[in-house]
Amino acid sequence: MRIYKKYIWITGICLLLTGIFVWKHTESPETPAAADYDPVMVIRQINDQAENTADSCIYMHSVWQAGEDIISVTARDSKLGVSLSDVEIQIKTGSGKLIKKQINECDPVKNIWITDLDHNAKPEIILCSVCAGSGAYGDVIIYQWDGHNLNTLNLPVLTGSADGKDYMGHDRFWIENNCLIREFVLYHKDDANADATNGQRRITYTLKNSKWHSTSRDFFIKKVQGLIRRTKNKLD
Image (cartoon, rainbow, N blue to C red):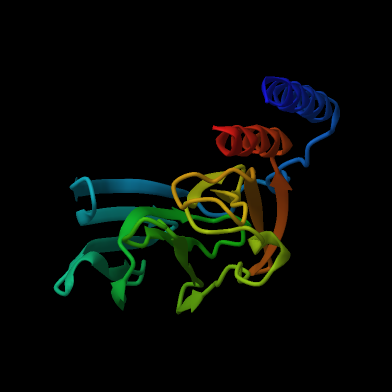
């Protein structure tokens, strides 16, 4: 039995070293570059306030200036409980017109971003949320303001797609190089919810002509580390 365990450990170490070599010598997908022209709209944050607990956002208020328009987004706990948020978007245009949008009972909002990812002078309002519960499934609600209307910009559906294979929540979102980034751990069929061992995936979303385009990358080294951990758990 000791010889068998030793053999398993040696095999695991070899796989790890192989993974490191492949990772070091494989050209990783590049994050799509920002547009090669200057932004046509200046966007700046004017005010940002938040009151949080460990589990929820009690109150979040963010105010941005986009060109001549002032965009205000307020998220607070829903009256139905802390596992849901109510969101109000207000836009005061340069001409003095007031536009309002109400979103009730969505997953708790964790971040608010206003940006112009494709530099078309139509800013995106991005609400990042995470559902209550151990799965911590993330989502984003995205609107594009064209100066007259708020238009929905849904991300490509993850469930049932190739990018959604082995996905079980635990998302992270952020904005980088004019792209929206989504990252999550991958699950092996025998994994417990708190112990994903099948690697990690990062999806990069770029916006062009108000349409999303995506590329994804799996982190091979994380997959090898998970394989070694699964093997060790079976032997213990």
